[in-house]
Length: 593
Image (cartoon, rainbow, N blue to C red; front, side, top):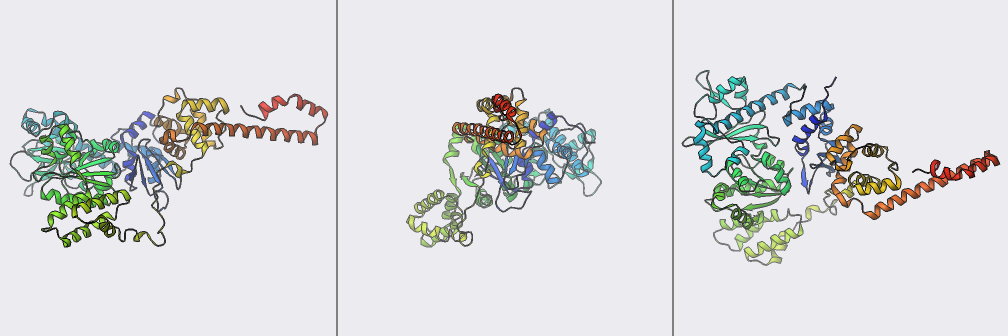
């Protein structure tokens, strides 16, 4: 028999995990406004009709009408029962269930994460110990506040060879696990293990849910390499993670934009300066996987790499990577001797924000500036080379306004006629769209009209979310007018609730989940998101009048049917009795109040 889990445990798991992250493991999601879109994993389609609503923590497909919450998605994706899905998600959320049976692979991953969690806590404690004072002083000297150090759980690895190993042995963690995730190494010439991180500031690298996946370590004083990072393990792949995303993701969603920097300190200092929506690419060139991960959270990327030649070269490459994910792309241009870390020291918070706003250019302008620098003489041949290089970027633009703006920039910088550049840039722009599909436009199904919501569904949502509408409809026609029996079940449950209009949707969805109506609830959540755009007062009055008229028509049909029956089968006494009791019939038997 499956173990029982109360609603508090279920809500705790759901609150700790974003449905965008779980669905994003299977579906390539693209943010459009407040929602995310992708190809449905439950049926074959070429145009995205599958949407995820992070605010409601629900998904819905307008094509096959599958929908639900984070649990139902895992259940359907992996053919699991509810208890199995809850146990799987609890491991990811770091929630200890009263009873849990899981696969060996899941248990192994959980155990390795626990090892990293303990190691991170050990390193953090070291930073505030007497022997760690010089490391803490170093961080404070670099301009970090104690608060930001705690927020990123910064730590310190002592100089000794076995400090971490001895601590973990005392805690009962096996040597094989420590070796497997790169916390210790084995001596080449003898059977001897030692700490991998020594005399280093430690930067825990976390998953979006807060699990510690690996570590970066910066040496204090002399020593090589300057930075030492966890290698690939069963729980950590640096090309699929971004430093600071755990701390930044909610602000990224809120701002719908993300700043990308190169290093740990750059990221932390940006957060401290007020740009919390900042991540770092873990000391590697930005990868396609990292860009795809960010696309779940935002539509705009602002690249802010070091101002030196290497940093600018990586910026050029990163632009191409994020453009493939359909981002709006901007660049913050820094002086050759500047990086985000020391830039935040150079300005106070207000001046820093002012600098950011005044030095942000779009990716076309950035590439144009770099291409001009490469040319010794800006003659006609050079201008043609520049235009040829930029043409592929210009032609990817979907907005006519953006297209014209950048053509104007090119004309001004290259001192050419705007109409000439326009012709050159637009040549062949629409050729790829001609042919069989030439007149078709890309469909982004991000509006409630696509779902073909019935007025009945709109009325249901209004009654669930607006007390005034609820009272108006309830007093006029009640709630048993729904033709869809599932909607009747929802309203039957809703009517019985106390303080119903002080419950948010997640609470209502939890109450309704017992009705096994996840698909309906997911679809309705998208309508709830639309708020006052669902139906206006006139439509509601019209709906009430329509229901009343329909009921009156039904009454008269029943009345005529009864009269015909009396005419064919009854006698004068039956007719007289019917006439005497006609008013009762009209209000009770034939009608509904």
